[in-house]
Length: 334
Image (cartoon, rainbow, N blue to C red; front, side, top):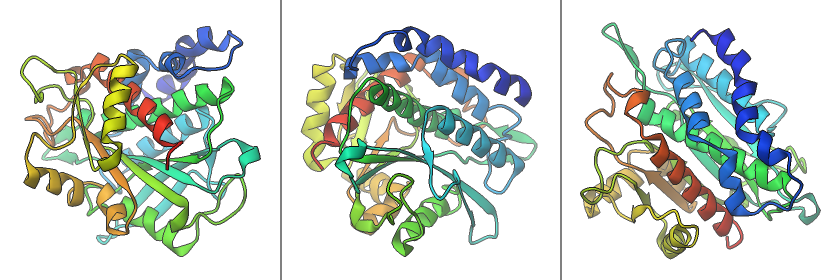
């Protein structure tokens, strides 16, 4: 679909998803927030990011710039505030490619004057076009970006419904994952150098203000279940003391995903995926409590077959729900 048609259609899609709940006047409950997203809204984001206009979203290409612009528009739609009056963090990779992180802030309850932040991130870049074939990257990682946008929508619903939080949430679409995690490195550099300021208080966002980094990387697959016959599964790596909270949240909110806290029972692969091959690595290296949510790599990962039709939107929606409920509960603890 052409970009202008997609942008024109965008407000209608989310109006259909939210008009019913917006018409009600009540104090929001966490369970009600699940209605702020749908399989249709998640699919819409994935379809745009895998469209030919994004051309595989390789860092430094026009396709990646189109993806970044779309995500910024979605951040604005979800009421996220730009940092330093701009949603974009522009940077250069070690190979001289032009990267663009997209950053937006959901503010906490103003009267609490919080200077604490949780970061929720998902990389949006992929392999681009290789040998004349576009690598659309539906699961890797349009699925993670779609889920992140869904989380922003659910938290927006909660704030508009009267729920207050004692921490801000920074949502970041990271570029440059395929270029040695350059986007995550740039985000950390800006925090460490004191060049990111709160759009709420104007204060510098420093290392000590960051309580947690949550990374969503490959979140739509169902081809490699933890147990046979259970495509509705999810892995959380690095949760440590919050593992039990995820398990109880999964049960109490009746989501009932098949969950695990390691990578298919392998200590070595768990260490690799948590500490070496995804964007949370950068923050873990600097002592920030970091968590990775993933459904694991499949035979379609990093291949041109990684297209939207292979994503189970019902399962992706349930995964998004569980991550939202877990963050909402853990935000009160950290």
